[in-house]
Length: 185
Image (cartoon, rainbow, N blue to C red; front, side, top):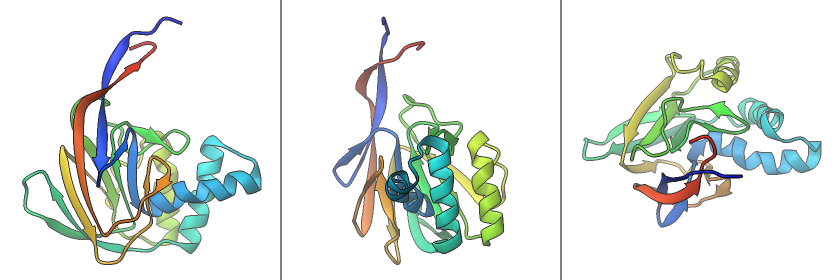
């Protein structure tokens, strides 16, 4: 197969590199929970992500107080049930969490959801499969090249599917730092 070479962005959080997703709260719980669900149910892809997601929403829909600084802007505070820092558009079997994300634009796409009741959370979660969550009033988006993030209480955290433990997070973009072969690019 012949594929052209392409330079794509790479993220770094507290010295750990990632090429797709860094997430916190419900979203990280879903991603980390898929390991157990995969072994127990012998499923993968979107069905696996859905099973873990429903479980997390029913039993772990916790809110976390955060402080977020985007680039040189003033820090902002809020409450969230999930926060994702994306390089690409999708994760979790194709859920389009940040549908405007580009692999090589030098910016992270950030999506976070304010606290919601369980039934509403399920609706918003399911609508993210096809990026229909973007107009939900609980869902917020931002873009940044450098992010500083901290929480009042530690949420679950995952970086490209692996657990990450820290009290605060310094997240930096490395623009077009990785060269890949990209069929159809």
